[in-house]
Figure 1: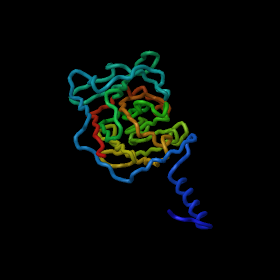
Figure 2: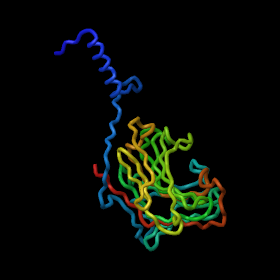
Figure 3: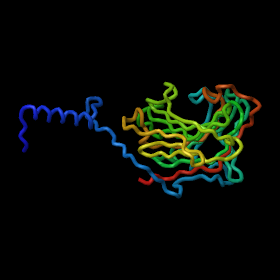
Figure 4: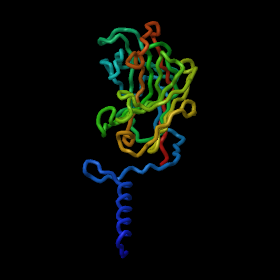
Length: 283
């Protein structure tokens, strides 16, 4: 037992209160300890735990992918109708999503969007695609991730990770971005970066994200150009501690893709994918 008297007692109590304030946060009347983010470099297994090399001769692998179907703008005022199989082809080890200028379901264009939701859902990992993006104003190919369970609520609360995005009116730039409640394009606070890839529309490149408990990093051909760190401030800035799934699509128009209009002569437009691979994080 330590006996404390006078000024020493006052100093001791003040120090104790400061210590509590630095280690605990009142949230909704409850005391919640903040997350401790370990400052470390993570590694990944060298063999994929999930992959599609697109070598099938019978079409899209239904054990790995499902189609998202329909029009309605998809939250971005997009102009395409997503079909099942009609705008997708697999040949010679390449998956091709082809957008066409044709009217269907009230939309002026058709295309394809596929997702691994319910068939491939992961917490952390290395996610990569080898792809060649299309040319032409109005095209908007993407390889990205959404939360499977929306534990923190609907978008943007539960987050979004954009591994690769490209817009046809800016053909030499590749983008990687994250969206959260605090950081999203509706507020103009989204966090991302871009890199010049002059041959993005003529050659295949490897686009990748490394997602760990501490950071999300974006790469092109193993060159890092983007990083978003976990600040430990909770889900409003870091909802990336829940399961996510992959999406692969070619949108037409929209608030970003159609910013400079849509060139009708750009169609049909092809988004070509050599493979998609997922590597497990080594904890």
